[in-house]
Length: 577
Ligand SMILES: Cc1cc2nc3c(=O)[nH]c(=O)nc-3n(C[C@H](O)[C@H](O)[C@H](O)COP(=O)(O)OP(=O)(O)OC[C@H]3O[C@@H](n4cnc5c(N)ncnc54)[C@H](O)[C@@H]3O)c2cc1C
Image (cartoon, rainbow, N blue to C red):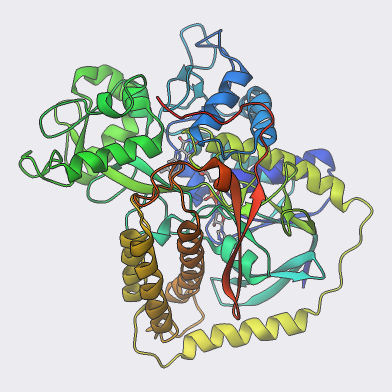
């Protein structure tokens, strides 16, 4: 058994920022950080466009209140406004702190940090490092892990949260290199395990974004919040789905349909291409449905994509501000975006819901009670700052603000506490049996085939447009696929760097998360933010100005409860742009 005072699962922005804060608060604490990838390969590294904060460098009239209002309206009034106030008030300080750590933000001519426009934000407030912002921030944070003596366990897969008597006591993990199983014990455990984009067949997310943290949380008998809110980013490169950052539109690119119209004029006349993502993604799909989509091969009408048009921006600006996006279109499609428009369609991008936490990162046991020793932050958590739809550049901000707060809270929480009792032999034996049963399964199905069928099912049955009928059919199909997943046969039966084994375990997480997304969506009979039901097209504040709290047990399946939304500053209004 390996002991630490504080144990953090996940090496992205949220996990690393929390680790730094634990060490800064109490340098005497022992901190372990486990990640199934190397931390530098966490999905945070791929973040492009930037991080919002009211530094007022580009726009002196900006204020945290304006940032908070944009965030609440962007989230269709489902965000908890106390959490949003903290996010937006603390934003400038965390950006300056990152800069002091060594993050190289892009500059204005006067030397101050540059700030660009972003969707749904009423002022230019997004700080950036060209279009490689996540890369710039994560590298500095990971460098700091060494400086603060954090013990790193990279390429360890965490299989289970040890949770007894309402207390998190550690985790069970196996080392991908050789299959060794180990129990890690700690006084405080934090999940910073990122998103679940791989639930869908077209996503901007990396291969590791499988919702493992969510699946382990529900397996421990704890609830998850608002999983029905799945963000589709409007501009996924067709057909691969990788992201073309919103920064491209922030810098002035147009969206056009088959007849060359900037169609956003019909859907969000005041914001045009910089409307929030839910509205823009739906607009693209409406255009495609109406036959004004484009066939990317020959540019004719009736196809599945819209164009992201950069031609009027000029090569110099493109190469200075968004070089990575130009490169992506060039590498994947052989397109020179300075002369040819880029074919795009919406791609699954972000998870607004997650593990319910309070503003100090303490995980909730229910709408009214907290757990002991269990913390979470970042994309896998739901403190609910994004409500029903996240604004671009608010997620990196959330990871840093709430990663920091959670690190501080954990350092204080462990003060004066001793390590919990854990029967490590029992957990190791159970994990051994579980791994061996996956390796020895005599089944007939392949992991890849089952995952593909599952991702296709989720994409078809719980996408941008939803109805009761479509979702009910999805749940039926999902049960069939799950039965097949029980009979998955691995080609590689060794314990040495068995990536097929990792994928089989990840498939279990994906399945569990998908079922909760579908059930939560089915129960929310309204349209709000990213959750759009054609059979209930209006927002219904009377019944559904509430967070979904979903639990799972093998006996009862998914059960749904609700939790009030904190509304203390901005009364819900019609959401028009
Ligand atoms: C292409 C792209 C561009 C983006 N651009 C922006 C942007 O410009 N601005 C913005 O605000 N947001 C952006 N986002 C969103 C933002 O990057 C993410 O929400 C954020 O970085 C998530 O950070 P995180 O620390 O929560 O998780 P991640 O960075 O995803 O890290 C998760 C960590 O958990 C580990 N992990 C997961 N499961 C396990 C397990 N079972 N065992 C052990 N370890 C595990 C992983 O190895 C990884 O280290 C973008 C997202 C994408 C996909």
